Image 1 (cartoon, rainbow, N blue to C red):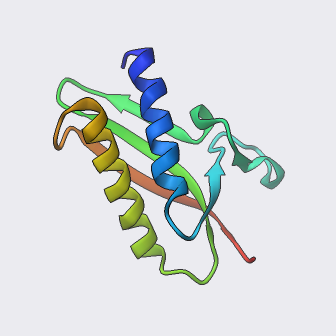
Image 2: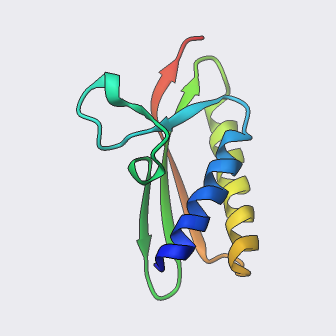
Length: 106
C-alpha cells in the first residue's frame, strides 16, 4: 500500500472510529503490559494487509463496559468502510475487522 494512501486511510479511520459512541480509545496490539494498551499511534493500533483485490484493516479498540458490543463493532465497520470507499473511490475493496482488546468501566 502506498505510504500516502495509508497515511490518509489512517486519518479517515481515526475520524470514523472516534465518532462512534462507546469507543474509549485505540489499543496498541503490540503492547506487552496493560499499562501500554491505549495509544494515539495508529500504526500500533491498525494492522494492514493488502492483496491484488482488496485491503484488510484490523482495528484494535477499547470500549466502554455496558454498551452493546456487537452494535458498536458493526457501526465502526460501516463508518470505516464508507469513509475508506469515499477516499479511494472504490466499493467493496476493504475488509474491516475490529478487535476489542479492552473493556473500560467509566
